[in-house]
Amino acid sequence: MNAEYWLQRWEEGRTGWHHESVMPLLEKHWSEAGAAPGTRVLVPLCGKSLDMLWLAQQGLHVLGVEISPVAIEAFLAENHLQARKSEAADGTHYRIADAAAEGSIEIINGDVFGVAAGLLEGCGAFYDRAALIAFPAPMRERLAREVYAKLPAGAHGLLITLDYPAGEMEGPPFRVDEAEVHRLFDAQWDTRQVECRDILASQPSFAEKGVTALHTAVYALTRHR
Image (tube, rainbow, N blue to C red):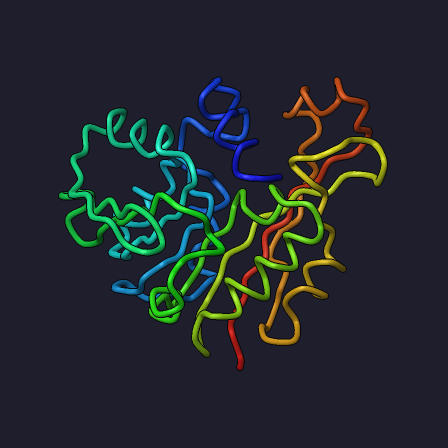
């Protein structure tokens, strides 16, 4: 999954992963993550997700990262927001004015693997609904080891995954089962599954591709070293 793949998907409007509302699992389980208001929250592959607005409205400072400028400009236009743009080594930074009364939103138009280490070290939490499952296995390893591993001790996370029988579909989204989550994170994070639900009936596009079972799971994580 190189950058050109995702840039083309956004250019062509093939963004079936985008939700037109806030993710209910975020609203239900964010308290499980334990991140206090005022925390900076990393949201990788943020797209134009309304989840960023919801997090900011909880008094959090969102740091989104998105490779596609089309997605960022759509987020601004669709939510009637304005942003100050500045250039940095890791990409174009959009600092959004009046995103929420208590919180804030900044989006980096760049590669998530190129975000400055100092910015990651300043994030006390992360929210991952569509990043880990967007990547094939080698890139999932990179995300865990090169991005999330740079968050500080005591950081919190909320991770949402999908799982379906191996061999029934080619990602993205890729299947990430509970064993893989623990393998990727347990060395540095306390990892706890807080919900797992069957969603095949509500996702007919997966059934059309031959998927016979589909589950989404939510994990709360706390960095212990």
